[in-house]
Image 1: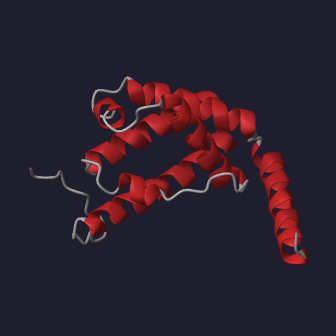
Image 2: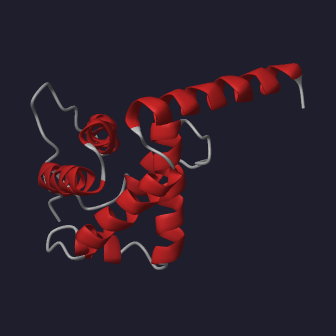
Length: 154
């Protein structure tokens, strides 16, 4: 291992410890939140059909989402994927993003301390906004400030 990657790993470890200390978030909380949130999604009338139509193995998906959220909130570096590519062709619109965020906020507040919930929610809001803008762009739509992704007309 090179000196550069050692120092990057050291910085990542220090950042992760600081986040854990400041927020109380750890890998157990990440897993609990991911599993609780996706249980809600799977029972939601607007989101469940989209997820069920694209996820064949929920165990693999939940593990991947634990890696993703661990990387997002704990800077663990466990996730190595391209989420935009996975979502770009989904039949979603602004209402789906609103519902996803609503369920995520509820789940975070149920599972986490207020500080940890806020930390997760801030990142979820940025991810949702980025994903919505990216999907719009892939559809050839340019969303202006305050505009939302429209349903696909089929």
